[in-house]
Image (cartoon, rainbow, N blue to C red; front, side, top):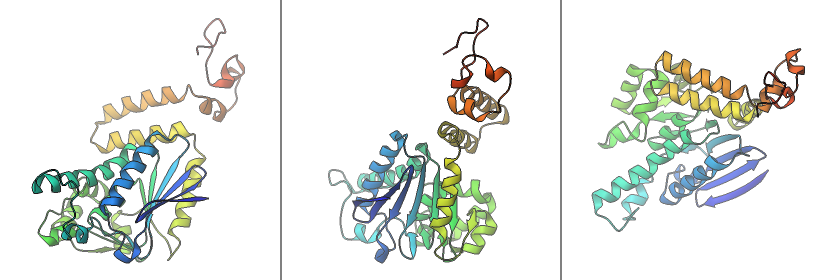
Length: 284
């Protein structure tokens, strides 16, 4: 396993085809500082093009996943972009952080979030953007900004929460900003699994190993289908997407290796996943 510090407050561990992204400023509850935002954006763009990396684990060090945008950095007068007016500067920052959430959906790798502590505001939104969320007993979730006079809908929370736990439960969380503990998060369906203390990352690695047993193209296309479905496609649309995907994948070498052997599989071309035409020639 190799470890690479990306910037202050962010490090990456690579173990073969698994990338673990660690928000790493525990004394401040792993805030999304300007440096972390820029580092994460660059990393996600790299992962988007990296076919060798198959699964991404996202977690925080210490007693937090992430407390969200670094309000202390903002209060210090530090600017995300000092070449524009104050409203434009704040909006540009908001867009940059929102792009992290969208980036987790754009990368082809499944993302497993391990939440061992506080996930508040933008931190909760990052966790919600993952494909799977594993929680430890100390995990908490809250739409913190609504208690500060801003909107409860922040960085994708008004998009993801209703789809994860239902409209009315999401509304109650976003209107009040109350804290949901790990047990309630499991009951609501906000997390997939609740482990023992300190066991979350090991469980995520076990899940990653199971994902790695699936053909890479199958995983990527399945994530694409899940995203299309989440965005409100009709049954007819999803059937069409699935039909096209299955035919595409059925022409790959991974499919040819994985399907049961039969008499038809003995024909020329089947070893590479290509079916022969009527004259016995490969269609590749």
